[in-house]
Amino acid sequence: MSLSKIDMLLHHPRAVMFAGLAAVGLPWLIHNYRQFRALGQTRLSGPFGYLIALTLTAFSRETVSTAEYDKAATQERWLETPVERRGTRPLMGWPCVPQRQTNRLPSNEIAKRLDAIFEKHAVANPTLVETIVSPHEKNIPAMVIHPDIPSPHKEAIQGLREIGHIHPIDHSMHVILSPADSKTAIDLGWAERHPLGGVSRFSVPNSYLMVYAPRDEEELDVVERILVASIGYMTGSRSVA
Image (tube, rainbow, N blue to C red; front, top):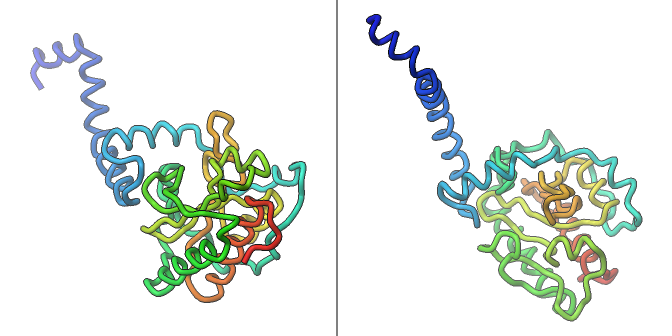
């Protein structure tokens, strides 16, 4: 490099710094953005949605601790204790929104069975729930508390009265469980908390959980029981069909 070029660089250190950051950071951003897009179409899309996801992720927290649920005012349960889920937890995409798993996905047959189970319980409980566009996701169906039922607790209000929804891309599911059931589902490996759950700046309650996609008949049965427990807790009913 010539002395004149070195002199120019010494007189423009900020330009050198920004050029270096761009050289290192641009490939990372492109790769990171592609990972974000691979998580599927959500209410956050495109470069602007990506920037929102980056920002929100800065406020996120860990997702599998459960000591906080022991301090809840109520310890009522709707979920019969299931068996422990086999294997390690699936991997998650990097952003906190959308929260999606990236491996250990179900077969098409199991995915269709889960969709049918969700629809079955929506139809079988017409006085407890109704199906509308998800207040959280904005672009997929969700089960919500029937408008004739008052919100039974603050979690229902914070959760926009949404009981749960299935993510089409991976067939994981978001639901709200009671504090005691949240502890059980997380401790036994069936779910994890939303990364913004319980973060004071946001409205998502700490019992807003992501239930991992079922891989076989046994797991499908447990996930169905978790869904029924969510319907019961969110509607205050002990008679969920």
